[in-house]
Each structure stands twice: as structure tokens, then as C-alpha cells.
Picture 1 (tube, rainbow, N blue to C red):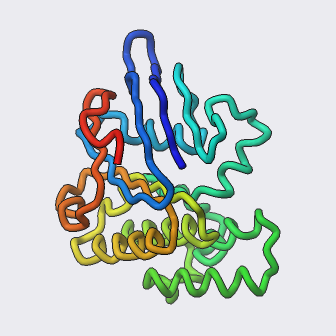
Picture 2: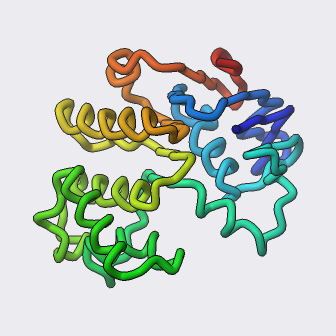
Length: 221
């Protein structure tokens, strides 16, 4: 599913964000990426959906080398990937329903099916009662759940989440992890970058640990 071969990323000369990373994430895996701030967790996720390009090395997703994917083809990659950003990236000129629906509108899905899927996903995440609200009026935890709904509503084959439980209490965090476990059980490959070691221990899933841009443990399942 996902393979990295000798991947390095330098933002400045001699200041690597990632160094010689080799990693294999099979189809249907559920893995946490852990490590201190600056370890390279967010950079790794950004490279998996081609927001960032590696300085060197190869990144294969479904057999495609996305390190060399033309800009005109990146949208086809992202249709297969659900992304939960650390800063949410919700659109302030759209309400909650419209923010989540956008992920389906770009696929040309019929309006009735969009409405059905969005309602079910918002209900699943306990945010359906705020579907007509402007996202900027919501709490941080509520905004996070809207972002997660948007990432999952198109039933992606890969889910990438950067600190998805940030700002949530223990109960809400576990609820989000239960949703991720459920979509994983249905076949979605899930990769979660997190500082929340309690969640990592509770879930008992694979751990990929980074420090200083280097892989310490968990390169292979």
C-alpha cells in the first residue's frame, strides 16, 4: 500500500526534517506515528498526500511513485486519501454541512447521496445538531470532529490524521479513535500522528517512532 525507500526531506541546507526513511505500511494497517515535536511526523504525512515532495528517495502509494507524480495528477491521488489537518482548514464561508459536503461535490456525486452521506457522518461523530452552524462559532473539539467528518465522508482507502485528538478530552478522544478503528475494520488504511501516548497505549496498534527525522522503531509491520 505505502512504501518509502531512503526518503529524506531538507527544508534548509543541512537541516533535515526526515533522514533516510524506509517504511512499509500494508493495505488495511492501522499505525500511529509518535515522536517529540520536530521529529518529522507532520512532514511525513504531508509527503504521503504530496503537499511536500521529498528531497531524495521514493514514495510508493498503490505502486505509484508519488515523489514524481505530475502536479496535474495529484488530485487523483487525493481522491483516495482522507486527511485530518492539525489546523482543521475549515472554510469560514461555508457552514458545517457544506464543509463536509465539499469532499463529495468535487467527485460529482448526486446531491441526494451527498446529503445522505453527510448527515450520517455528522451523526456518527455527534455533530449533526450543528450542521447549519458556521465552523468558526464552534469549539475546537467540534471543529475537529467536522474536519474528521470531511476526511471520512468519501470513504477513502487511506486516512491520514495529524493530531486528531488535540484539544479533546479523554472521552471524546476515545470516541474519535473508535471511529478510526471502525473504518479500519472496513478496510481503510489508517495512519495517525499523535503526542497522545495514552491513546496509543489504549489502542494497542502498531507504532512508528521518529526522532530527529530518523526512524527509530516500527519501519515494518
